[in-house]
Picture (tube, one colour):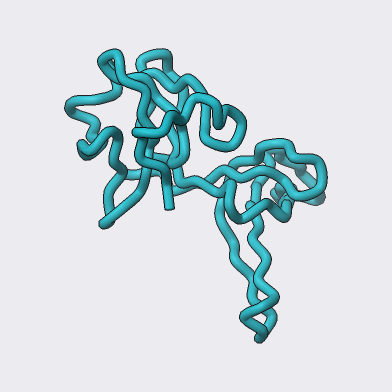
Length: 137
């Protein structure tokens, strides 16, 4: 089963956070806010009750990327917007037409993780994205 999670850069301090995606529109399409919702795995027992901590971080919408459910050859999670090296080429992971693509080929469990290495992302390492590379829209 695919693990559905996202990452985004926090609006307040620019740190990366990972979790569920929440988009809030307060009845006004001009006022749209994007959040990453995190469930901290701290378990507290109070009077035989189990609780956990929930955090909500507002993120910069342009930085949000979905987890591909794949790890690169070093065990690093691969997200939409990552810059990866594949067979000597530097390409960007994009999500289009219901699938994740890397260098014009669908990113699948069967044929890519052992060949792909995450070397950055389009937000932190824009210098890695050359003129001929497909950029996420």
